[in-house]
Amino acid sequence: MISSTVTTGTWAIDRMNSHISFSVRHLGMLRVHGRFNDITGRIVTAETIEESAVSARIGADSIDTGFPARDGYIKGADVLAANEHKAITFNSRTIRRAGANYLVGGELTIRGDTKPITLTVHLGGFGSDMTTGQPVLGISAATTVKRADFDFAPQVPAAVVGADIELTFDICARLV
Image 1 (spheres, rainbow, N blue to C red):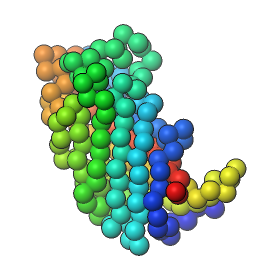
Image 2 (cartoon, rainbow, N blue to C red):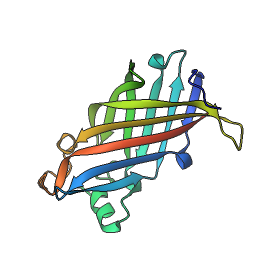
Image 3 (tube, rainbow, N blue to C red):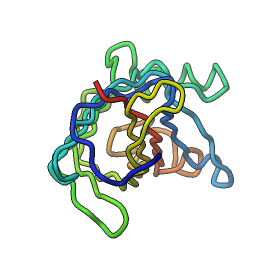
Image 4 (cartoon, rainbow, N blue to C red):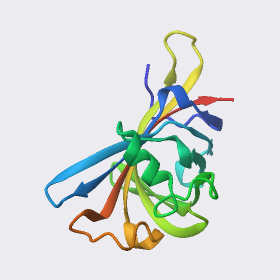
C-alpha cells in the first residue's frame, strides 16, 4: 500500500530499481537519450519533507546511450572527463512545496564544477516492497541544465548538440 504520510528515517537509493536518464537535442531535429547505470545515495526524511535532505553520487563512466562510440566521447575530456572526475554528485540545500510537487534546491557537481540547480520532485509515496515487505520510498524528479554551465564540448555548436540537457530521476529508496 502506498502512503503520502512521511516515514522518517534514512533511505539508501536502490540502484537496481532506480533510473537516471538524460536527453539532449541533436542536429536540431531529434533527441538523443542516455542513462547512467551507477547511482548511490541517501535520502533522509524528517518529520516534514521540507526538513529532509538528499545526497547522490552517479558514476560518470556509467553512461550508456546504446552507442559505444558516443559513450566514449561523452566520458572523454570534452564532456564528463570521467577519467579525472569519477563522480557526478548532488547535495540538497533546500526543499519547499510547490503545489503537488516539491522544489529541491541543491548543488550539482560535474567535472569538479559545482552549480546550483533546482529539481522538480514528485513524491510517489512511502510503501512496502511486495516481495520483501521492506519499507520503500519512490520519487520522480526532473531538471534542465545548460551545457555551457559545465563547459561540455564548447566547440560543438548548439545546432549540433542542443544547449539544454534534460535530466530525469526515478528513484526507489529503501529504509536502512
